[in-house]
Image (cartoon, rainbow, N blue to C red; front, side):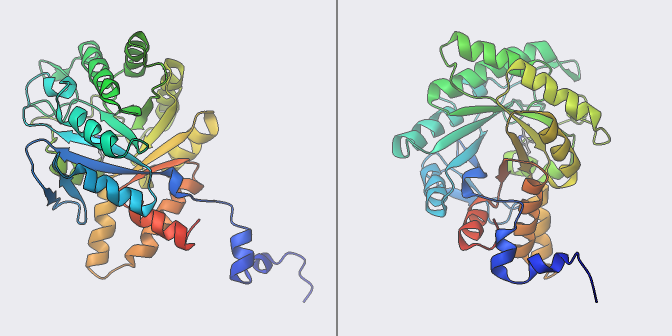
Amino acid sequence: MELVHRPRRLRNGDVIRRMCRETRLSPDSLVYPIFVEETLSGKQPIESLPGQYRYGLDTVEEGIAQCVDAGVSSCILFGIPAHKDALGSSAWDPKGVIQQAIGKIKARYPDFYVITDVCMCEYTDHGHCGALCGHEVDNDQTLELLAKTALSHAVAGADMVAPSDMMDGRVAAIRHTLDEAGYQNIPIMAYSAKYASAFYGPFRSAAGSAPSFGDRKGYQMDPHNRKEALKECALDVEEGADIIMVKPALSYLDIIRECSDAFEVPMAAYSVSGEYAMIKAAAQAGLVDEYRIMCESALSVFRAGANILITYYAKELAAAIQKGDIG
Ligand code: PBG
């Protein structure tokens, strides 16, 4: 049969398939989330995230050592403080959990790239992402708290700050505060299009950061919206974000594609706790092949246009890339 177009020619064997791959992955693009708990000694498994741990300040280096061994060169830190109050004042304490963790990591692994999540929800006693005025988060007062927190991370030695609060104007506020203090070279990765998502459930139980009343819909985005993501990214870029982020990843691949097409800055995607927990649960029930689902899901995020992937599977993915199973 005369058939000019036979796409199968390029699928006919491993060498040609690999040659023609349109998406290339590298361990360099992976960021591993690490939880550090101030009052913990040793490490404790996180029930909601099988295979993940909360680290004490005495063991956080162990978490980094595993990243280094796996070929992952960057982490994003989340803190669980000993003390919570209405404003979340432990967040900017120079001796706070994150500030101490950065010191420990940098002392042992000076080249390991440490990103910090900048948000108030783990530090406030009400679990919202900023200072309250009645039952609402007060946007402008929260900007000051976030900027102070980001600066304290930079002073402690963080390489990059990542505000995840979704207050209006926070990138500008943080940029201004960092610059005034001489930290012009610390980049900001903004959680730009962060949706009010049910996929954060396992994280909130891991970090003890669920809101004690209400929800986050007053500041995180409505999952129905697409154009609003473009607006949020545009504002963050204008305010000085060096990297923008879409979060969650898997249910928002369309948003990743659109925002990565629309903006010149690198695009990060956060494959969040619920995405990880679902794969783990399905695999444990014997329903899917965990390894292949992990690879295919991560691949889809890069194919959608992301340059950076934050994922609880970072170490396993780095190994899969190095083995040549993806990438
Ligand atoms: C802090 C923050 C959250 C996540 C990252 N930073 C929780 C939230 O917004 O409720 C979620 C990460 C995940 O689910 O893995 N605001």
